[in-house]
Image 1 (cartoon, rainbow, N blue to C red):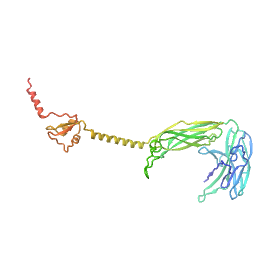
Image 2: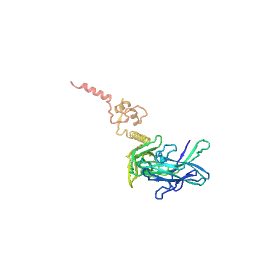
Image 3: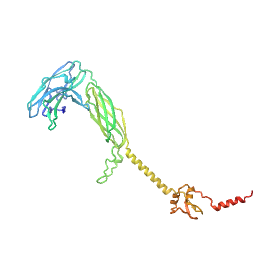
Image 4: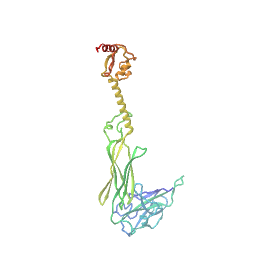
Length: 394
């Protein structure tokens, strides 16, 4: 197994790993970062002599090899160096080292000259790569049989004079919920259409209305403390930032994770700002709206509402269901079932309203009946009516 370790300097100290390191031997005090990186502005066909200082800070003699390589963007678009075996068609092919194998005593520093030559057909703009310092003998991980190749790289930048173009192009912007996780993933894909590297300031602005947590300030354990801010305070918005270094011609994808709130409506927009000849340029993505709907909580709330409504209706029916009922004196032959049928209610309800222990009625008994009840004619009234019809003269 081969493991490559990269280090990229930003300080005045020599870049080192395992006691071996290096730095530019001839820094220009008028060029920023030239004490850590090799920075050139050579024209087509032009060459320049320079040197790299290699230092052994360990207490053992070290043998290292040196070789130039091209740059490659990392997964996040940042600067990285290709492997020794990768093809070289840029900076890695333009540098010629005077020595490629160097032995250093403890504390020794050696200056290794090299020449950088710009091809006559090189593209205008920035080119990047590096000079790698690597131990000649790979280390071994005890008990695994795996080898570790430790290397350090000094960056090399060359900008071929000509028309410099700085332009970013948005390729994709999306917000998606991560399956089986309480998080959303924000994805931004941008292509650097420039002929130089760009370092845009990237910010994702999230606005909207909602609740990120139900209980944020109150305490329910170890002594209950209720904080009204949990009822009155809602989502205030936030921004997620990232600094990129996008190499020329590279399309880069970056991600952020955003913790899923409890509920609400949220708007997402990314903003990239970079400089072009002293002026700031801005690339804005379209807005994306995300609704977070707490279906489980809504189901519980809906069930509680239904339970309350049903209970209320039952109470209304229990306490006010017999309002407007009138008294009725039971006649001879009346039966509870017949009275209930004539009233349009069940005999059970009629029995409950009148608190009857048995469905039997007695003549002269007073009961409550609905206003819709119409008593039938008694037998004596039927006989009288029949007799009066017979006595009626023809």
